[in-house]
Amino acid sequence: DILEKYNVKATFFVLGTNINSSEEIIKRMKNLGMEIGNHMYSHKLLTKLKDDEIKEEILKVDNLVYDIIKEYPTLIRPSYGTISKKINKIMDRPIIIWNIDTLDWKYHNSKNIANRVLKKASDGDIILMHDIYRATANSLEIIIPELLEKGYKFVTVSELLYYKGIDLVPGRVYS
Image (tube, rainbow, N blue to C red; front, side):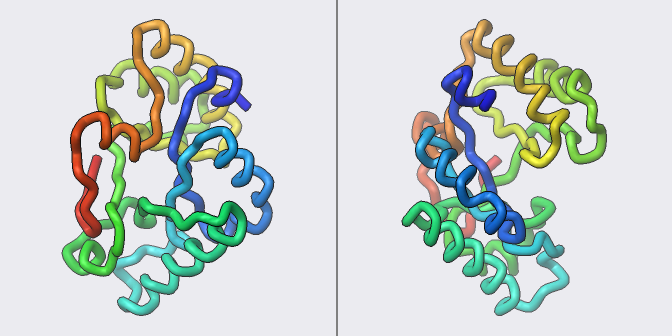
């Protein structure tokens, strides 16, 4: 609702276990021009999984998303942001990591989340937020107007990399 209110875009890396209860929200995200990425099915630590288990984590989300919006996610964010040579080799699309962690998963405080972003934000940042916390949503009522006033534009990750002239390569990490 807040993103729509300010007409700004974002990329949502969806977790497979949450998809079935969020079908209408995912359709709405797509209709509003948001980007839908893959965040694994069950949020397991990938370094503890075999190659075929990692592939299954990816495939399950891909298929669930496709069933809802008729498009497959083109970006992926590994659980916990875990990357390694093995994981990168398995990933069949660009891997997106953040460079600003709001720590919203740890501190459920809107002002704290907003302050972390506003103190660190600069051109080209990818900010990690979780759409499952009310405090995170509330922080956007502080963050978005202030950054818009400073001239920032909110775009999807794919748009950001396009505008920066960065070619996306499967298995490569971007932040």
